Length: 377
Ligand code: COA
Image 1 (cartoon, helix red, strand yellow):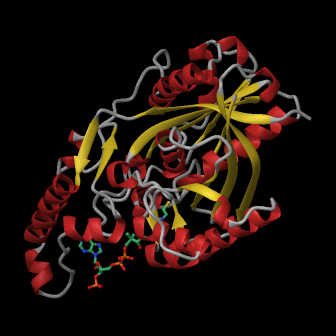
Image 2 (image 1 turned 135 degrees about the vertical axis):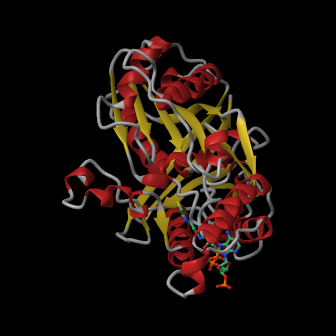
């Protein structure tokens, strides 16, 4: 068995940002148009009028102020309300591959690794662009990496479950180092016509290099003390899109909103928050650590109030942004990438010996906790 460490991270942020005000203006234009077009039926009581959205609600309920997206114009067009992403030929890199390559190059650079040092690529994300071939194999080819690649999907917990998988591969000696990528084009599965959730997601890609400690060349690294994963089935976050949709006798069902992201936000909040806090506390105890030993928590970035509650349950007191950094205000929920963006942006100020936890949670339900310790040599 070898010891494994995180030696590099990377982040690709799409160039287009949408503010709450811009998103709400487009949503409300759609609502007005719909209500006008259906005014007679609404007056007869045969149909309910749609309600407007508001920036103030979005920020208060979620903490989200803006989100980055692959395509802005298509989302904000009230006639379209979904990103406009042209299909590409088989000879061109896929969108996910392109994002992953950007993030990968940064992670490789700050881990001091060459392409030849990487033995495997894992693409772990909520939404894979196609059925096959695996996006990871495409990324592997684009970067010229030998070895192997495979894709994983554990929704919002894809990155932490991918980290555990990469660790196991490195510890067992199957690979000297693994490049883990989390390309998330969440805007493509978001129903921008749904008032309850149209503001939730953004697009991004994160990358991590996990490697054998005896082969590291960097002076700063993060020992992975332990990882712990848990899942518990729930329908409260669900997307029924899949390859069998076209087989349903009712051809129209393919277009139903359940083929996009759907959630019972209140239930998720209530059920997942204690599950996550308990898992972190148990995980720390199993490693002879107490919550007071934590310098920082890089939590999944779905909802600010949820993160404040989880952190408070773990520490037994209110937390500061320094203890549990927030990136969802700028990025919104980027599914599996959220906790890794926080880790990428908020780790340089940690001192040698500081301990932190990267924690994801989401559909499944799924929860992943990864305890890391900073080392400087
Ligand atoms: N604009 C204005 N008002 C809105 C609105 C919008 N876009 N969407 C909902 N509202 C209204 C509702 O109609 C409701 O009004 P009422 O009280 O008069 O009935 C009120 O705001 C509260 O709605 P609710 O859905 O209960 O909001 P909430 O406080 O639970 O916040 C979420 C909604 C989704 C932000 C929140 O539940 C959440 O983030 N949950 C966790 C989700 C999560 O982490 N998911 C993981 C995904 S990976």
